[in-house]
Amino acid sequence: MELSVRLFLESAPKRQRYLRATHILFGLSESGKFSPETRRQLLSAAVEYLKNGLSVYDIQLFRRSCEEHSDWLPEDLMVYEEEEAAVGARAEVALQSALSCLERLHVEDRVGKSNSNRLLATKRGRLESTELRGVRDQMRVAEVYADIRNYEAMSKAVNRLLTLAHSMQQTTAISNRADSVFVQLEVNRRVVELWLGAGNLDALRSLVGTSTATLMTQAAECLMQIQFCSPSRLVPQQRNVEDLISELEEYALFFQLCEVYACLKIKIFWFCSCLYRERFARSGVDPRRCGAKHEKEFFAIPCVAWR
Image (cartoon, rainbow, N blue to C red; front, side):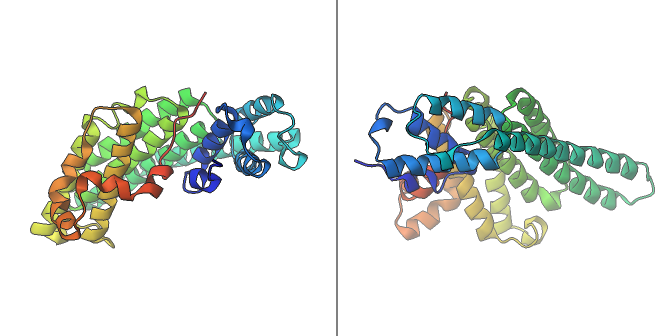
């Protein structure tokens, strides 16, 4: 039966579309039996990513794989040397841009710390704002290293990112506690995606283990306080409780699917059950089967980079 290319590629993140396409083309023994149109769709998706991406290594690897199937690749889907050079130049610019953002942040931070006359509240607000910018910029650095396939540098950037996000969570004022917990969850999710893209399952264990379970518990506690205590102190601006609950559900589903995929021993849905039990009861949905109604989200999670 001919597979649906759209089903496998459309909902996936950008890099995962490439990884899935190349795995189907070059990693499956039955790929030679695909129709010309299916093969062209897969090749087109891979080449589009390569030409607009940042990895010269990916281009070279793709070219070597295509050499084993020279009859597959039409001329309009080839990646030429000048396009490869353009990708390399664009990667260098992206990396320098990301690193310069970090440098500017450090300079601004030193200037800000030199002013000792600010009120404590102002300092606290600026600290949180600066650290949030630092998290964002460090995340960009890690993503660029992942795009150019420099996983050693990416690992160092990820470690700095996790340390920075954890520091922000520890020092955040109580008024922004929910924000800081959700920022940490988002950092964990994006780092998990980076390691999945790198094909390193071992690096995931600390991210979807006890630390993430603790974060999920803290997020659930924040939402319960928002619902039953004082919303004005805990609700981030421009966001309501339903938005936060939906976001937490998405994190729970994502980490649970990662657990199933990587065969890790953690049951993260348990931490959300106290929040959703009544909602599921009203809707008649069994929470233990809630993943079955999220087929699109399942196909959207990253896949390991096949070697």
